[in-house]
Structure formats: C-alpha cells, structure tokens
Image (tube, rainbow, N blue to C red; front, side):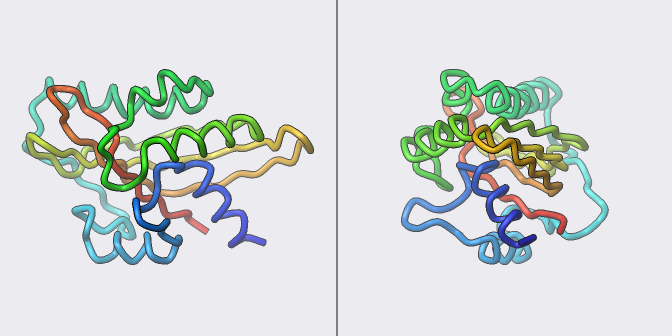
Length: 173
C-alpha cells in the first residue's frame, strides 16, 4: 500500500515528471538523481545553495517556483501552464496539462514547499531543491492521502523568463 501511495503522490504531484518518450518509474527517477544527473545527490541531509546566483535572478527563479506550486494548489490551469516550458526536456507540455486537469478534477491537492534552495545555477538552467508536504483528498470518496518528499525542479531561461522543464521527486517513505 505504501508503494502505491508514493507512486500515486508522485504521479499526481508531478504531472511533469518523466520523459517525452516513456514515463520514468520512481526507481528510474531515483537512479537518475543518485547518479547526479540533476547536479547533486538528494539522499544526503546537507543541501547547499549555489554560490553564483545573482540576487535578481534568484528572486525571479524562486518566484516562478512559488507560482508553480501555488497555481497547482489553486487548480488554476492558466497560471500553472504559464510556469511550464513548452519545450520541456522532462515531460510533454500538452500531456502534462491533460494530466494536471485530471488531477484537479479528481482530487483536492495541497503542496507545501519548504527549504527552497537553488542548488545549481548557470545563465540557462537553475535547479531548485525543496522539501514537499503533499496532502490530497479524493473528491469522490473523501479519502485523504499524504506524503512527504524531496523535489528538484529544473528551470530553464527562455528569453529572460524562467520555466519549469523537468521535475524529480523522491518520497521519504
């Protein structure tokens, strides 16, 4: 049951998690993260902020990350879609919007991010680490589900605007 819950949470929380060709399993995502593909290992306890982030860019990146979380919680498809790259490397933009709408239609979802930290940065890409508390209620049955995990959200700079291009999530259980 716990594995099922983690998978459900990961899918619904991260409609943007995966690969354009075929979705990644939780094990594949964990393996990618452990290999350092997203710039650091999420399994450790110490998260260090990237030292080279200009203050103005830091504010822009964190604002987009916060809007990504808030717009999903508000089930606001227009705002949510505005945070996503239409040329994403980690998901198919149109499919992500369909899956997000399915989640909005079936669940009330609240994601709370803490320890938000830019852990890797260059002029083109930023990786934002956050601890997530996820609470969901299935609308039809009032069944409550919750999960805690760690997430790296990769954003790219598209003509001066930061957009989410991929997401990596590992549940703590």
